[in-house]
Figure 1: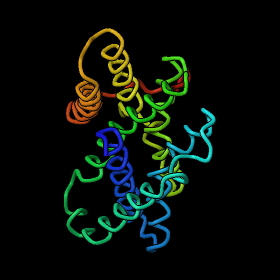
Figure 2: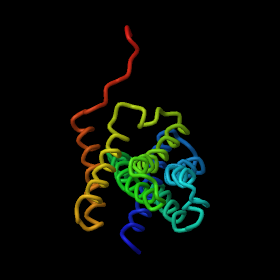
Figure 3: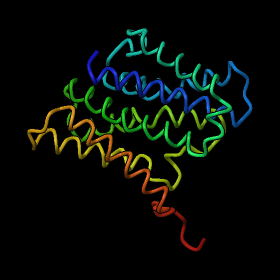
Length: 205
């Protein structure tokens, strides 16, 4: 198993866990929480694959993705009480997920001949669409539409990836970890220092 594949499965598992944890706050039943976990884990990759013309979508061609989802769901259910007691558990899993999936989506788009600026959008879509679907299904305003540096962190990380990939001779694994680290650091600092994007308001309000 390559590092790329390992991170892809790991990110899928992380997002499944974050989906179940968010569903538990809404007191959904086991089936409902499992569906939220599945949608969170595969929603972004499914959207990306449909947009770039890769069909059937990745998780339907490779059953290991479903196994990663089931493992994440199982971990969330078995250790629910412990995970719920950790204040930043959801944030940790969600941040690791977007860091990994930004790279996965960006690299897959590039491999399909998508231009780098559009490949950045595919990387961001892979990272955030699952969360958008998750939040929508549980009747929350998606994180991407709030003031948090969420998609912004993914965009900056993806840009860093392209710069390192095309203009340096760093090994591929180092480029991946630098990108992932950038996204995680930006999001973490934004939360700790309360850095937010300006709020859009109509004049006079």
